[in-house]
Length: 395
Image (cartoon, rainbow, N blue to C red; front, side):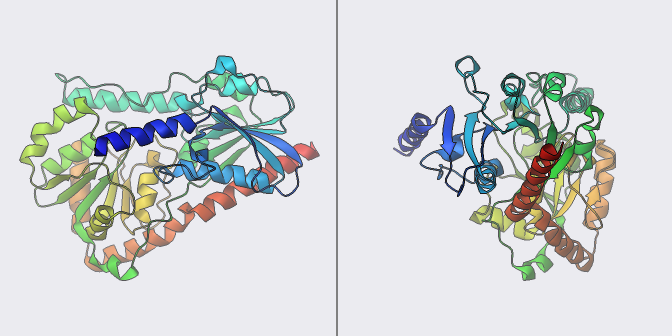
């Protein structure tokens, strides 16, 4: 019965989802213009109170983009990224166009932008420039096959549906989620680039006194789709040889080819716990993040890894690659070499950190996480929009 109910809810959601939502004006007091947003219409199910609203940070962020546009005087039309593009011909009536463009979800950005002659066109980048991203992903898979030449896994998260050069020819400004890694990848296009800070779920809370209870011998991997891209294979192989340390894995378990490769290793590694996907802020999430000292995430291509910023909101200390898109300052640890032996050496060294030093790092990580809140997202987005609008009017 539970599966039937779940299936019914999904079908109900699909039946309410629209390819285009017109004239969103809930927060607009006086109309000054019209904006078009190309992203997802899911958050607008049931009048903007869509199901699973915090399943991913971008659901709330999409609603917030429209709220800010309303606040600035724009009615908003929202086009879903999975629209049948042959059925959609936008009128050239928009003053501003914001479209997701950096991943395969943004495949229609150039097609839409080309029809909007009068609009300011903003390329919304949630990750690094696609050519660079693909290069880094292929290198990560090459390293996997070097270690496992007899295995076969699916190539995931490569970008093959975006014409980035055509998109950039049509772009007036880039809004980029991420740190200098992602931002610098777009410098070659010579467009104004604005840094946007990603949000975190408000369901995450922390008791400061708990920060003293974290163990330097306990590590958490917390990630989404694309296990090899995000480095889960590296983490498993490193911790399989470190039985005195504990690794908790919270990730999707739907990559069956990946699971087959690591099934035996996980079965014989009593120090590695495969938890599976867990909702942010629930009991299990809070229990695991209350005892782990570090969030380890050796990804090769991110805008800003919200799985890491989410754990920073709980005070975990990040151990990440430069390409994870996280500013580490003086509290986190950079993974400079993703080779297994070097990763093992670094993890072993971190496990010997004193409780007092780890607590200091944990507090600093939590304080730095205020750069990744809903308020910070709103502030950075609104400032960027105002700057683009003012500069366009003054041109």
